[in-house]
Image (cartoon, rainbow, N blue to C red; front, side, top):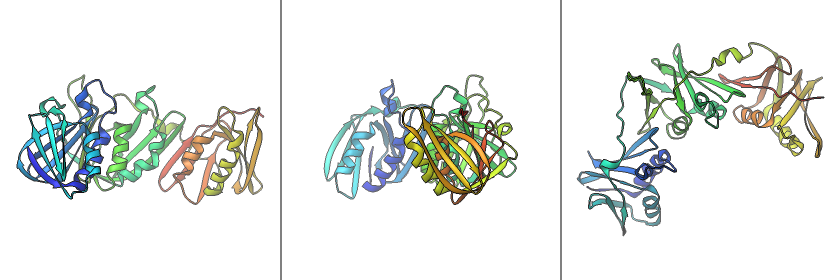
Amino acid sequence: MRATTKRGALLETLGKVKSAVAARHTIPVVGAILIRAGGGQLTLTGTDLEATLTASCKANVSRQGAVAVLPKTLEAFLKAVTADTVTLSLVNGKSLKVEAGATTTIEGFEAKEFPDVPGVRGKPVVVTGLSNGLKQISYAMAKDDNRPVLAGVYFHSNGGNLVLAASDGLRLAETKVKAKGRVEATIVPAKAAQLVEKLMPGKVAIHRVKETAPDKRPTISFVGDGLVLTVMAIQGTFPNYEQVIPKNGSPLTVDGKALQNALNTVSITLPDNNAVRLRAGRGKLIVSTKHEEKGETEAKVPAKGKAMIAFDIRFLKDVLTKVTGPVTLRTKGAQSPGVVKQNGTIHVIMPIFVEG
């Protein structure tokens, strides 16, 4: 293996691919990146055995070959030197020699030790606006694996749209993006959803393969912006979330920025359950918190409508970061979910019961 490429292009490709690498793993080679030279390019692959990400950059390849190395040292060296080009060479089958004005040799692993890189299979479904859609709803994913089916984003087709939904059991977000074709219902793990959101802002082709073996999970590949991400889907059935979305309710309209400022103000006396109370009527909204030791704080903002309900302040703030301008919150009482709909996205927050 011997190849020469632009240092900046290699750094950019490395930076993307390393985001798929396992931070810690019992198998050392899983913490490495596979570098393969051939076909006029360098192809880099990282994996955590659940998700595999591949990206390429152009290169002048004089000898084909491959090696796996830990990305930290390679990235540090490439950032330290100033040369425009860098030459990579394979040494003794498992070491990478890097020349860019200065020279370093990085001990690595033979390419055959690296996990198999899955190919892209299945009919493509082209999706527009997937990254933006995920940005709107990914905040609602479960942050732990107590309920595995909630630790990701639920993909399913509806007409000419791909529907994206996420929920941690206490809140829910749903949006739709345009799609040419149908994607069979799939739960995409959180890490993969975050990678697509961050790295694939353009059109994305989705390839889903339903494995026939009973012990194998379906795989789904995302191809876009010069990247290929293949991930094993989460097994299980996503909850029938549509039944918890209230169909109507009394509207409360308030400026989103003013409400954010009020929430920041009352945060100084948050109770242990993070409850913030909303009481609206007669043209104003009273936002308040009450702590047994710190006391009580309230702020008033202009509003239209009526409401009397309490939410986890963190969840309400998360919704406000996704909306702009006037916000309309619909409620059906203190014990029913609150709903905000804006720009085709639905945000649902479960209420908190507070006394008094």
